[in-house]
Image (cartoon, rainbow, N blue to C red; front, side):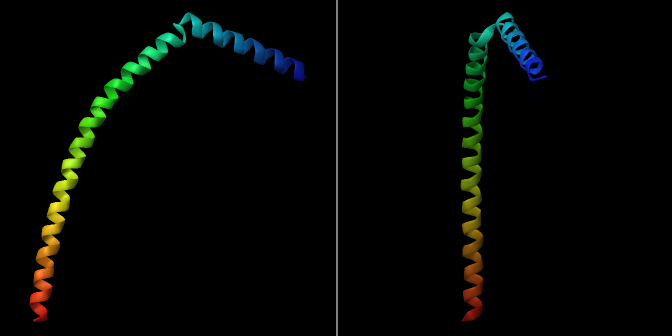
Length: 78
């Protein structure tokens, strides 16, 4: 019974290798991945810059709010 499973596994491996070569192989896949990754990196850089400026704005607003809160609390203590 194990021999039949082994033979089926070998046949499926051969068929998968054959179909990979028929569809363009690994070289074409590498080119597509490189193109997608370079496109994705530029888009990701734009998003990081956008989030960075958003984070800086949020930090400034939070600092202003905390400063006003501190002034109110200290003003009430006096």
